[in-house]
Amino acid sequence: MRKIYLLLLLLVGITFLSAQAGFDIVQFSDSTKYGWMDWRQRAEYRTELLERQKLLQIYEMEANSMRGNIIKSALAPGWGQFSNKQNTKGSIFLATELLLVGASLYFYDRSLYYYDKYQSATQVEQIETYYNAATGPRQYSLIFLGVGLVVWGYNLFDVIQGTDDYNAAVWRRVVENYANRPVQITPTGVEIRF
Image 1 (spheres, rainbow, N blue to C red):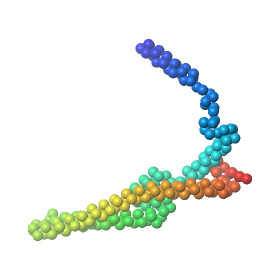
Image 2: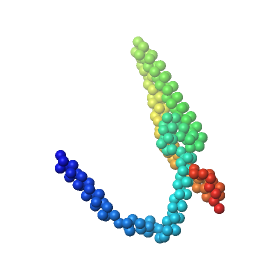
Image 3: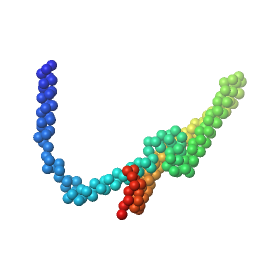
Image 4: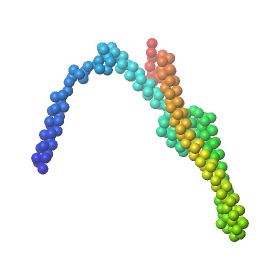
């Protein structure tokens, strides 16, 4: 057992020693591999990076979460559209879904009513009449339910596109506001540019 531990320790030691021997400081510090020809370009890039990070922090505060909007719209159709400030679309999806589900439940209730009469009927003519009366509303119920599922699925597809559009508009607005204002309130404080 000691031999195995000693062998493992020796292998780890050799790995660490070979890793240090292969490090090339000249290649590591060569800034031309990033497209920087001198220290000024590197400093400009660093400044631009810091500016983009500030913009991203502002964007993150205002943008909508894709996952959150999908969950919202899955629970209540139109809720994600309301989050994206698409109130008309949200109202249409919500009203359509409520109407379709309501119609489906109404016809299903009518079908159950006639089915109960069918089960309690004793005459052949009554049995056939109530059975035929129960199958029609049941088919309508399934049709309305199917259309409701299609509208629900399209609602999820639309909220994905709407969230992308909303977040793109937020990013454009953040960039335009940042470029046009000499005095800005950033996540790190007040900034004045001349």
